[in-house]
Structures are given as C-alpha cells and as structure tokens.
Length: 600
Image (tube, rainbow, N blue to C red; front, top):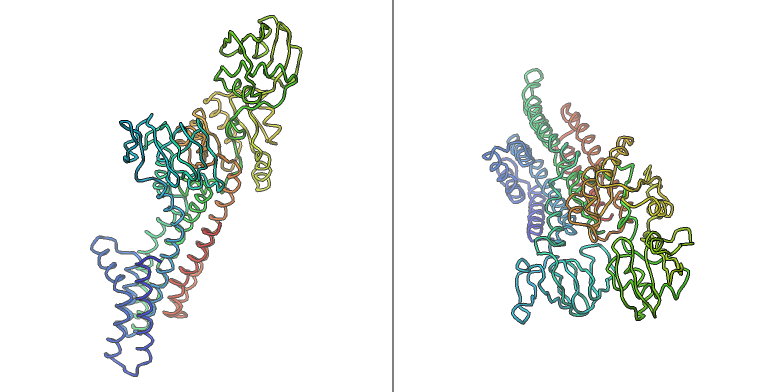
C-alpha cells in the first residue's frame, strides 16, 4: 500500500469505530447529529472539499458532487446514520479502486526503470560517466555487470549474458559475443562489455518503448469513449430527475421529507463511478498484461481491434522466417568447403551463410566478387566459380542439378556441387497458424517481395491459407486492401522491414517486430512485439478478448443494477441502504472483476 492508501485506511477505520460508537449512544436530537458529524467529516472531508472546488472550476456533475449532495441532504432531513454510512462505504470503494489501479499500473511503471541514469563512455583516453543523452553515434560505451545498456549498439569487446526480460519479455538470458547487436534497456549480467553506439539515446529502443507506454492512453477505444460521453449526458439528466422526484410528487401526494429522501437515494444510485472507473481500469490492466509478455500496445482501441481480428496478414522475412540465411543441404562436402573458403571474402548474406556452415579456411587466390552473381577464386591452381545458375553458365559451366538448390559450385569447368541456402521458417510458425485457426481466425495470408519459389516453400511449411509473392511496398498495400475488402472483420498485419511501414499503417492494426524491426516499421505500427516471436500473436488476441469480455461484463452489470434500483427508489421500494449498494457496492464488484486482468 502507498502512504496515501494507508492514510485513507486509517481514516476509514477511525470513522467506522466512531460511527458504531455514536449509533450505540443513547443521546438523541441535536447532540446525536453533532456526534455523527465527527465520523462524517473524518471520512468525507476530501469529498466535500473536492465537490466545492469542482463547482468553482465549472465541473459540477461528478461523483464528489453527487455524494456531497446526497449525504448533506440526508443530514438536513435527519437521516444521520445513512449519511455517514453512504460516505463511509463510498470511501471504502475508493480505497479498493486505488489499490486496483496501483496493482494494474505496476507492470507499466516498472518499464520506467529501464532507462539508466548514467553511462560510462570512452573520452580523452579514459572511461568517464556522462548522461545517456550525451552519448553520440560511434562512442565506445562500457557496460559493467549489473548495469543497463544505455543505447543500441554492437558489442566491440567482450562477451556476456544479458537479461532482456524488461524489453522482450524473454526470461532466459541471452549470450552475446563480439560484433553482435544489443538493444538499450537490457541488463548486463556476467562480464564487462564494450559497445559501439549505433544510435543516440533519444533514438534508441529504450526511449521508443517509454514513449509508446506514455502515449498508450491517448488512443482510447470505442468503449472508453462511450463511457466518457455517457457520463457527460447521464449525470445531469439524473440530477434533474432527482429534483423532479423530490418536488413534483409532494404537490399531489404530500410528505415532502419522504420524497426528498427518495431523491437523495436516487442521486446516490445514479453516480456512474462503477463505469467511469472499471472500464478504463480494465483496459489499463489488459495493456499491462500485454506488456508483461513483451507486447507494447499503443492504446485500448487496438485491443478492441485485436479482439475482433478475423484475418492475419504477415510478411515473410523476419516475421515467419528467422531472417538469417542457413545452408539447408549440399551434395559434395569437399567442393562446398572450397566454396566456403572463397565466400568468406564476401559480406553478402548468402556468402556468409556458406562460409559459416563450412567453417573452412583453405588457401585461395585471385578472389573476385561479381555483385548479384557470385564469386571467383583459384584453389590449388583450379578455377572455382560459386554463384547462381546463370553465373556458372555464362562462364561455360553446365549446371546439371535441378530442384531447390540456389547456389552452385563449378571447378575447372565442371559442375561440382549444389547448395541449398534458405531463410529458415521459425519453428513456432506452423503451431501459431494452427492456434490462430483454432481461435476462429479465418485466414492467415503471407505478402512478400520474395520470388515465387522461396515464398511457396514458406507457405507450405507454415501451413498458411494464402500467399502473394514478388510484391513491392505499394503492391503490398494494394493486395492488403483487396483482402480487407473481402473480410467483414478486422485485419491485422505483422511485419518488420522498412518496406512494411506503409502496409502496417494501412491495416486495421499493424504489428511490428521490435527487436529486428526497422524504426519506420515500429513507428508505423500500433502494437510492437519486443522479442520478434510470432507466438505472441495468439496470446495477444486471447488477452484482448478476455479484457473486452470483462469490460462488457462491467458495463452490463453496472447499468442493469443501477436502472433496476433507480426504478425501485423512485417508487419507494428501495431506501438509502440499497442505494449505497447500487453505487459503491456495484463499483467494488466491478473493480474486483477488473482485477482479473492482472492474472492474465
């Protein structure tokens, strides 16, 4: 509990003890009224002060005003115990709400601790402490065990385990070596490492995450906007109805005190705090549940879209695949080792994959690279060509192999080996697609700029419902619009590259891969998966659905109980005690129901 919550609890306990004591005292009349004022002011002074302050600021119809009007009115007509009890129960409800808000905010506010206060940077021949904002691109940053990485960069020296849980939701530490990329906000765990800064602090991942969290409340969903509009209209209407109940019936039926008491009960019932509190709190809890899994949602409106999602469209490279080329197959080990010795002189991803797979360092000479085609070199006096089919054939080498291989090796004019290099499909891809289907998602479709052959392999392995290949960015947008036109529900798009930014923006909800994704993709997206795991998608949809179910439960329950008790109160079948339940009791039940979002 916070200090303020403890103070409120002590006030409630003190007021309750005094209230019970006053009820048991034999005094009557003005003395008892004055005694009841003591616990009333102890527990309700802040409500009275808030009501008066809001009146002067032009905010008349809020819960403070309704509570103050109802309880002061009850004192005026001599219903002292009811007045104190209403205020007491209202404050108990407010305490429950405060605790619930505090718990649901915890997972969000923990993110605010991911930004380090200082960083060690190499300046003038030594490491010195500076503010992270002072780090420039190219600076060497020393990160000791236990410290957070201040900016995105590449490990220049050292190796260590880093805790990425605050940024990606991944609980298993990641081991990083020299030349590997690291993102800001992660904690170095085992050994000192030196990092070359690739971004300034303001452009780094940690700042983007904090900005996303801070602005997530700005994108209100349909239900939150409904509650805001509802409260603005509803509260003044019920105040006018209460005035009518208080003063119109006595003209015909007499007994002004009884009708005023009904009107005051009517006011207590009418307070919309159960809706005003529980609905935003539910969304806040849902966003918090997402953040604990490494999913950043930029507003409650996108939770609603995820809940209504019926079609998932995704990019291939880096989304369905790992984004890292690997050698999947070859047919001549020695020839491939020779090829790998030549390919190590190239920085092309395909060449790097072959070099890494063979791990061979034969002595080769006269190495030349032909961009877009392949490599040439001489090994023990023999001419070696490594590249695509066209490259070998234009150098007089007939490629005899047919099938999936996309890299070929020619030695002394003869086709010597075939190599299959692929961008491996993520192990979780097929399982994710199956889960989405079991959850009622109608279609999972891939849009990619890759050629037909590579796209078809991924399409088959992942078990997708459709795929479109060889698409430029504008082609992806056009194809997405066609898919959305054929779908009555909501369409979600997952991507990670710069070329995905336009289509991420066009989708009903764009989801970017945060670790490997480009800045443009993350900026254009509505949701960010910080650990690039597509397995988060079914989990995110599941959380969104649970959150919206809780929101609807609170709305239906709150309105149903209030309408029923309002009618009973107007006709004299419910008194102040039922009114208190219909207001504060309903609020407490709704808030307790909302706390279920913290267990998701």
